[in-house]
Image (cartoon, rainbow over all chains, first blue to last red; front, top):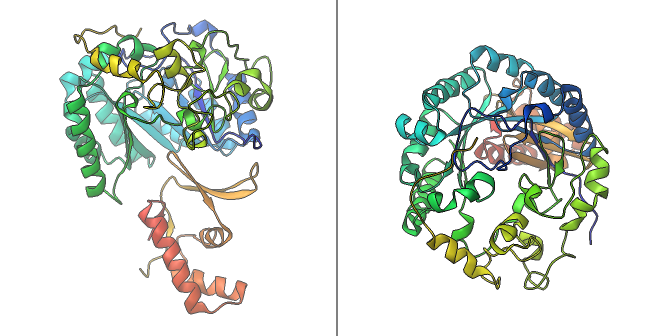
Amino acid sequence: MSAIPPPLGLLAELTHRCPLGCPYCSNPLALEKRGDELDTATWQRVMREAAALGVLQLHLSGGEPAARRDLEDILATAAEEGLYTNLITSGVLLDRARLNGLASAGLNHVQLSIQHAEAGAADRIAHFQGAHARKLALAEQVREAGLALTINAVLHRGNLDAVAAMIALAEQLGAGRLEIAHAQYHGWALRNRAALMPEPAQVEESRRIVAEARQRLEGRMVIDFVAPDYHASRPKACMGGWGQRFLNVSPGGAVLPCHAAETIPGMRFERVTERGLADIWYGSAAFSRFRGTGWMPEPCRSCERREIDWGGCRCQALALTGDAARTDPVCALSPDHGSVLDAIAERAGDAVAWRR
Amino acid sequence: MSAAPSLAPQVRLRHDAARGQWVLLAPERVVVLDEVAHAILSRLDGRTTIDGIAAALAREYEAPPAEIAADVREALEDLHRKGLVRL
């Protein structure tokens, strides 16, 4: 096996608190409580350790990262360390003054979520009255502050028919980048899967609309599209491969190869309060468990794509087969591929459990 | 194309000590630079024109200015299409 590369990106989940209730949230069903969150100084140490380890991109996320009043202090340390700083936000807790403060502290990029192109539908999905209007106002303020703006929309059955309108909205808001990602079924999204699962015809139509928009907007707005896993025949390299490119620190300080990894039974993830970030990245049992190709069963082990998709997503294998060490069933070569087809067929009513 | 090129807003040029390379950082993007790209981008100051950059590089590398100017223009136009450079 080749040498372990240093990580490129850190996803810092500062808190699980969030005023929105989106039913596709990737946070775990058991949300961490405020009293269990890392303190300011510890997050600042994490930023210094991440930079020393070779991290270049920092994603401040949550929950809603602005729910933490020390966001500015954590961000400032990251910026001083030379990290490129991305704030992934619902937007509803930010106003112009706070945004400008974040810009002064060294923020580079705001990734603002939208739930739909129309306020009524968007607020219903977010389970928060008035959220959409506040997001639109913030988008303008982000541009005025001279920050880079990405609009981020998670797609599911309830908003897939509005994909063209959401692209138009991102354009109108002056976003340099649009990220349209089909819901990935972890956490709350897994719980609400039957209500979120799109119709296959909707998926095809959305692919066509996105491809057309990409061509039309080339050079003006970058569109990153995350295709729906379940409707694919080959898996994605989840997080660029387990322990290959990214690490994630949970609100309480657990260091994870991906944000859903804690759902895998029998694994222990060390905390930044127990051991240094570099030691955990290079030396922990958890990061070694599914890194590289040595752990792979067939059909991955002898597959020519094994270092392209790294066997797909461990959490998806767990969710669909009960065993995180199997080939991601999204792959048509997986003996468990039928479980994906069953899940697609299990579309049920629109009632969801709101994240809380 | 006579205006002075510059990095696009919120695009950062920095040394990546952990991997011994120069990179451009932008939203969700890390672009690894070869020696030539770094030599060009480190001269973007919002005042120097493409011809000015090419002349400086031609002196430094003792290469024909016309050839260098074509290479510089091509490299910057490529980065412009990717949204990383303003021309």
